[in-house]
Image 1: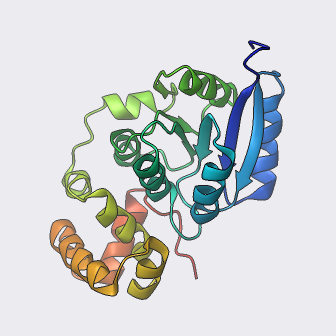
Image 2: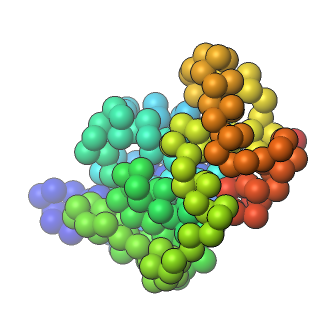
Length: 219
């Protein structure tokens, strides 16, 4: 660490406080990284990011309210130079590609060895893209099946609405969480149904579960 510059300032975004506590200890044990803010959801993270201006934001994908991909979109829309690192259990090729295409500076699976998160934060701070060894084969492998192709056809906003709907949120919930009109959500729903070729809500949920977009259906 360059003493004149200080430690790398990190914000952690994960909806499990115990998990965040473990990440904090992991990141700060080397002395060159300091966790300056924590958030349990995307809405709080968006506000805290502006308040604390961390060097790197480390976020999970699946959280109550807006997910990590929507947080990524919102942060980069406000600050094109924001460095957002995705750290999640949801490491399917589709989600990895979507995160990187959406502007994430790196992707680390929670199934990878813990030190890869530390390496990823340091790489992100240095302006380098990082992909852990566990996730890299999934990106390099040609996973362009029919469902994967359909999912990749969704825009970032369509994908976030798809994720929220699959997790059990209503169209009204989507409009409130994403700060858009009900008409906008309805239009996106039509496009999502056509692009994914799903006959109804149950099929949409099953598609999301099969492709790791959601882990389970939240009540």
